[in-house]
Amino acid sequence: MKIVIGADHGGYALKKVIVDWLQKNGHIVTDVGCDSTESVDYPDYALKTVEDILRGDSECGILICGTGIGMSIAANRHYGIRAANCFDENTAALSREHNNANILCLGARVVDESKAIDMVKIWLVTEFAGGRHLTRIEKFSS
Image 1: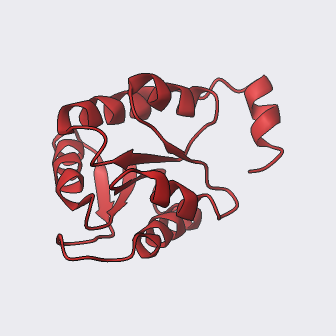
Image 2: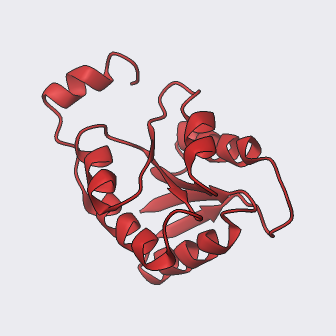
């Protein structure tokens, strides 16, 4: 799967771990930054990730900041993006099954590396249920 990933300084270390896992598991990863723990503005990396998905370069994305909240707010400003800030495996699965989320947002200060990898695993394999859920998301996103 082609996946784009972005993070701010608060999510930089977790991003490296996730990129490594994704690549080891056969995914094609586009890393849009950031590239250090030096302070940056998270909306810049959310926009780079969103643009990659909207162009069709990647199938889905992952955004990481301290809590995941800022990234999800910044990403969800764009039509066609459904960014879900998840905190456990259940919310990750439901974000795909019910909301057809195309961006998984994670908080590096909220979830540890092991839980984050578990969330990414389940998020990537969970299918969208469609049906009544499609009717609902069509009201705000294509």
